[in-house]
Amino acid sequence: MTEASRVQKLLNEQNAEIDRLKARIEKLEAALRKYAEEEYNGFNGNGEHARNVLDWKDD
Image (cartoon, rainbow, N blue to C red; front, side, top):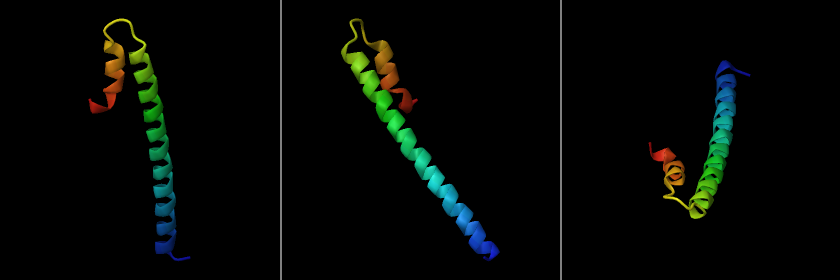
């Protein structure tokens, strides 16, 4: 295996790991959003905390 092919293999592995982590982040964001929406919908006050959680990514 040449040096270039070893480097390419490492890059491919790193890119696959990055893609896996991005997918996990998307799942966690979706779960957080769902939780915040449920909390907001059931909130008896002004819902400020739940709105802040829903908008956290925009900061």
